[in-house]
Amino acid sequence: AAERLANKIILITGASAGIGRATALEYAAAANGNIKLILVARRLQNLQKLQNDLQSTYKNLKSHISVLDVSKIETIKPFLSNLPSEFQKIDILVNNAGKAIGKAQVGDIEQEDINDMFDTNVKGMIALTQEIVKDFKKRNADDIVQLGSIAGRDAYPGGAIYCATKFALKAFTESLRKELINTNIRVIEVAPGAVETEFSIVRNYGDVEKAKQVYDGRIPLTAEDIAEVIVFATTRRSNTVIAETVIFPTDQA
Ligand code: NDP
View 1 (cartoon, helix red, strand yellow):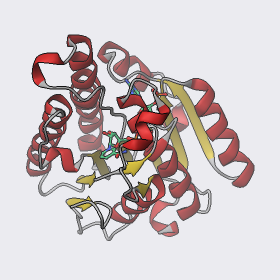
View 2 (cartoon, rainbow, N blue to C red):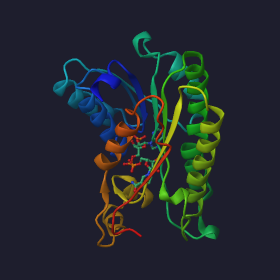
View 3 (cartoon, rainbow, N blue to C red):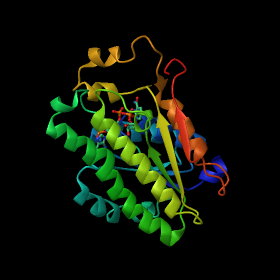
C-alpha cells in the first residue's frame, strides 16, 4: 500500500471528525507519511488539531487544511483553483462530508433540514465531483470514493430524507462508474451501517445523551473500521475496482 500511495494527493471532505478524520490518519499510516492530504470541513479548529497530530507523527507528510462548506456550491470552484500549486493535481477524492438531521415522520420534517441534507449529501457532493472528474479525465487520475450508507439501500421510517439522499448518492455513483468505464478512474462506494462518530449527535441536534441511545445495546463500528476499507479499496491493483462495500456491525440486521 505504501508504494501505491507514495506522493499521492488525497482530498477528504468532512475531515474534521468521524470517518473523514480517521481516513486521513489511516492514509498517513498506510503511506508512512509519504503522502499529501487536503483536509476540508467547516470547523477549522478541528482541522488544525488533525494537522498537528499528523505533522507531529509524520515529519515527511504534507497537508493543506481549508474551510470548505460543500453545501455552498459557489465556493467549490474557487477553493479548487486556489489550492497551493503542490496540491493541485489531486489523485483521490473522498466524498465523505454528510449528515442526517432529525428523525421525523415525513409531515414533521423541517424544510431547513431537508435543504441542509440535500445540499450537503447530494448537491455539494455532485458539484465537487463534477469539477474533480473534469480534471481526472484530463490526467487519467485515480479514485473517487463515495460515502454511501445502508440507508441508501434499505429505507426506514423516520429517515425519509436522509435515505433519499443516500439512494441519490448510490444512483449518481453507479451512473458515474459506468460513464468512466475504460478509464483509470475508479468509482468506489463504501456503505456503512452504524458507526459511532458525531453522526448521531448531529442527527439529534447536539443532544449527546439521546445520540448514545441510538445504538440500543448494539456495538457500532468505529470510524477506523471504515477508514481501513477506504484505504484498502484505493490501494488495489489499478485494474481492480471494489465497486461497493456494505459494512455493518454483526448485530445490526
Ligand atoms: P460525523 O458527523 O462524525 O462527521 C461528518 C463530517 O462531515 C464532519 O467532519 C463535518 O465537519 C463534515 N460536514 C458536515 N457538513 C459539512 C458541510 N456542509 N461541508 C463540509 N463538511 C461538512 O459523521 P460520520 O463521520 O459518521 O459521517 C461521514 C459520512 O459517513 C457521512 O456521509 C455519513 O452520511 C456517512 N455514514 C455514516 C454512518 C454512521 O453511522 N456514522 C453510517 C453510514 C454512512 P464540520 O461540521 O466541521 O463541517
